[in-house]
Length: 542
Image 1 (cartoon, one colour):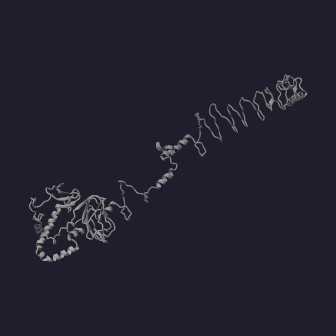
Image 2: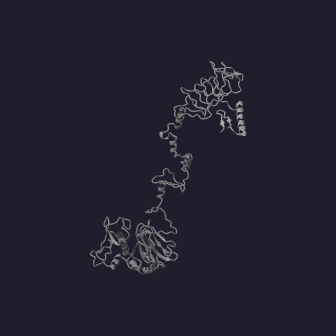
Image 3: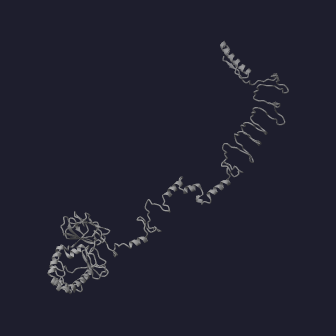
């Protein structure tokens, strides 16, 4: 049979037949529980005392009796009268409750007077008087408004964003920590905006206008530092004006000053145009040369070396001619009058002839050799097309020959008189007589090597002695003969009319040109030069 246990305090009843030791240990445990009940360490449950007294207080008497207890613990206490710690209970008028701690599930009814200490839990109703200490929880006014003389909030004040509740009645702020009214804020913002346009009346719009640059002031300052002050300064780069002008310039004084149009025009009038003009003073060349000169046509024209050499021959020939001239001095004296007249006629005839036959040209000319207007019937040889052309008054036309040679057998016209630019004769000897010219005296014996036929050259070529090259293209090289001898010559002419902008080169081929070890760059339009070899020191004379 097993042990049994009492239902309230759990006393153990040993089973029948248990040993003495078992009974002893379980009885000791039961006595310990009894001692705890009587000593007060274990609460007593369910004692029904209907009479007698506790601490001399009658139990179950008809009328309440006073009693003094050191400690009283009960699940339910029904006190209908008397006092607790001197406070009246169940009286018809409110009495003061005095105690160290008052604990209750609910307080119902008005609480008048000061509440000192901590209040934990919800309170409902009207609170009149000061609340001193911490208030934890919600303060809710069901209706109306709440008035506070002074609220000191050491934490945050969170307004319910889901309601229309506001803080009203604020005065204009004075201290930096004062709350501001809507009117104060609106006025302050309006003062900041100051009637700014709608596109620039927000901070975001202003930031966008400044390129969202947090260092806008530095950026602008750095940008301004790269600009030229209106007061003046030094540029570090070029100014590309395009089609614009720089106006208001003063007259330049330093070599690096910008010049005005008026100043440039005044200086330009003191210079000789490349197209030509009249010098007002002496041109001192020093040891320099004038190159690219055309053959003279007027008495005051400068003469080229080639023209002079062709006209007068070499020094030796001149000496021979001088001796012959002395011999024929008497004859010359006799025919002086005739020669003078013939010379005048010859000069006039030559000028007339020069106006009609213009010589070899690379392209059709627009004026005659004197720069005058073309006359009808003027002819020239086109060195590019190798054709003779005649001027009809408005354009050039090719001359179609009807015979390979023209002589007395197929010439149907009359002899052209000397006065009209002809010779007045049908034979060479009669022509010389009519012109008063004598071979070896007035005219030079014909030398085919001295008057070479021109060759049109459009590519690189090496010249030989006594050759005539007309350049028909720029950028080519005409190379002079190697190992030349004194008296060798080469004639070079620009046939493009554009040598000034599209030059060609005359290569010296080991010899000097005008005492210089540099090739000659041909840059004169339609110019013709005769290059004669002198010696190793001078080389080719120009």
